[in-house]
Image 1 (cartoon, protein in one colour):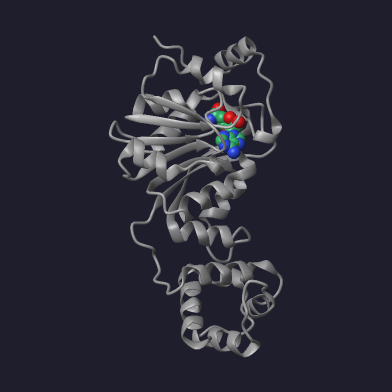
Image 2 (image 1 turned 90 degrees about the horizontal axis):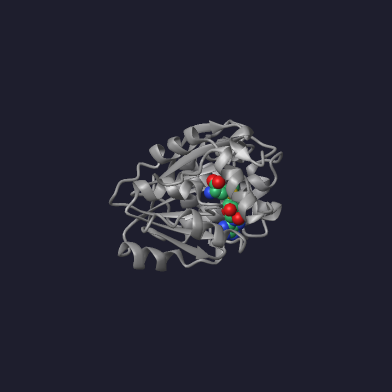
Length: 290
Ligand code: SAM
């Protein structure tokens, strides 16, 4: 049988064999729990037809599981020291391709074109937490064909992605994620499932990309500017946030008339507005302001 990783004993063996030293700056916390690995694979709903992009394979623990379930896997890893290890731990799988590089500088569209004839890919990862938001927003905003993203993130970040108006965790990230995808937290994962143990709790969240956006908005860029401005000054009213934004150029009158046009009170705060209401507000600005 193939030498599967995914438990502490084998992980330690591999790390010792190569004298591997964990790099904090790369957010390296390797999974050492087979139940969590199986849960991620199940949640990602991968079939033998699927092409999977894995971000940050580490020593290849989850890559082995992905390669068993998918047609093909491409894994992008930044750390030089992990490349020879991956070549060793994945040598028995012929459907895995390792790219040595930074995911934020990788041409994912090209990978989808070459490996999946431009069809929608699935992304699965135990993410490096220091760049969770740029990775996820980059995948959505770049319009690369992505069907779903199943990722391990910091618990608090998973909560922010999934929550709605009225919660303390609600903010620009919640709205951005929910505009593009339907989020679902599929597992909570304690620190002892990783080596070394992270200081924070983690969660696996699946983001299923919407086929059509859930709201109709005349100017997507403007909506995201309005959202950012509304949450910039959390303790102030939305009207103040919009008037003071560097990214927007509206007068007090324009701001107030757009808010009123949506049937909202002038003292409302950004955290009270749903995605639908932000879309309506955007459309009100498009109609009333220049
Ligand atoms: N997938 C492995 C696992 O579950 O055990 C490792 C997960 S670890 C949380 C994150 C991985 O992402 C590390 O291997 C790290 O070196 C890699 N990484 C960090 N920054 C990266 C970047 N910008 N591009 C690609 N990989 C990166």
